[in-house]
Every structure is written in C-alpha cells, then in structure tokens.
Length: 267
Image (tube, rainbow, N blue to C red):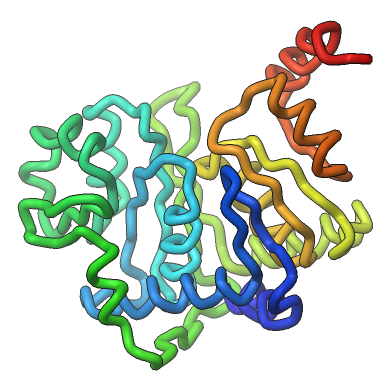
C-alpha cells in the first residue's frame, strides 16, 4: 500500500482510473484510501486483523482494500456469488474480525453469520445489526490526519486468498507484502509497463489476476486503467478502440468470447 501511495503522489493529477464513466486521478485515489484507513482505525482495527470484503467490483472495494493494507491489517476478498455455507466457512476459518459487505449480500448470508465469535459486520450501504454503517456519512467526519503508518514488514501477511478446493477443503493461501511488491516490480520490468499504457480492466477484483496483477500493477506503473464492472465482449472491443488501450488481461473464456464477437464488430 505504501508503494502504491507513493505512485499516486508521483503521478498526482493524471487520470488513474475510469470506472464506468467516472474519472479518478491518482491524488483522488490516495485521498480516498486515506479516508478508509482513518475509518478502519476508528473501528479499532489493528495490525494483523482479518478484514473480509464481500462487495461487487467497485472503487469502494479498492479503497477499503488498500486502506486495510496501509494499517497492517489483512484483506480477505470473497466472491459475492459464494453460497452462505461457503461464506461461513471462510469467515470462521480465517478468524475474520470484520465482515464488510452490502445489504443484498448481508440478507443472503444473515443466518450463517450468527455464532461467528469475535466478528462484526459492516454494511457499506446500510446499517448492520452491530449498528455499523452506512459508510458515506462516516467518511464525511474524517479529519485531515493521515493514519497510514504502514507497520507491516516484507514477510507479514497482506492477503488471504482461498484456493478452489479441488482436492479437499479450500485453504487460505497467505500472500505477503513482499509477494505483492515483487510481483508488481517484476511484471513492470518484463512487460515494460509505463505511465503511457492504457489498461482495459474487465477481471474480477476478488481474484489475484484482477486485483494484484492488473489493479496494483496499473497504479504502480502510473498507467490509465479503463475499468468495467462486468465483462461484455462487444463493449470490450469498443473500449479497446475508443480508449486506444495498450494492455488487456483475461482468461481463456474471455478471449474465446472476444473472438466470437469479432465477426459482429470488425469493419
């Protein structure tokens, strides 16, 4: 998080992200992350605490995630489509102390959240049973102080990413701050990633590819990220042309859908 904050200060008022038509500069992103770190501190979140995020792909997901890392806590990204039984397992197994979600997700998981010891629930768009939320009015009260102390060391855990559970129960893979930083730096060098690049981001933020490779890497390189909430092949082709994108990241299914759409969009 400190590396990304330094990148934001370096590129300042350049356009960092265009998310569903709304523009964010690097300075604006850094300020929003500071506000989330301040808010997390008011909740008593400390170094090593596990913060589970079950939110749709959004700027809010990114702001809270980087706020979590900046105060030494650990992010646990959760797919909004997980079954309630799966959510209960991930929250319990990880020892999550805070579950950040939204009203729709909370209603879906309500019955399975009972009995998880030591965990509070926060709704970004409503008020939880713990009387926490919604988030917007709380952010209005944030002062000018920057609470980001970056207490984590290289080998401290930054994220828990659960495996697919192919051969048994899903296991929480511990990803360190060193893992995240060296991954960013290596890809930047290998791909010759610069602030002149324009990345079309259509991947989920709950996976390493979309969050740690595409988003972290794009911010650190100072590039512009054109971010879509959901992948649509026709829209992707249009964005590549209109935004003159130089980078695109996907998985085989996405490339197959792009090729299938090509006959409908080519000149």
